[in-house]
Image (tube, rainbow, N blue to C red):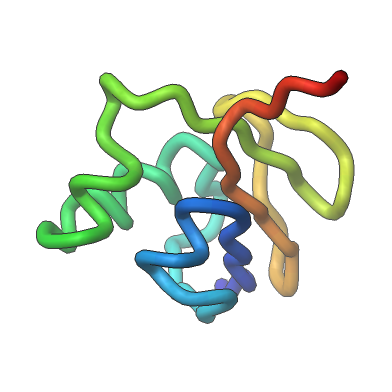
Length: 83
């Protein structure tokens, strides 16, 4: 299945705004993150497990166990503080 991945804030500056990713059926948000980390390079650095990264699925906050579907939109972004 193909999903659309969007990056925001510092992730966007390094990885770009958006990309399409192919995953096996039944994949989760966590499996997507692992697949991106496995690419190495900038993806591995910016999405590393030691980094605080939030995610949303179809514009709703999600945890890494959330199942993906064909055409889903996943966004990754750093935690945000407001004031």
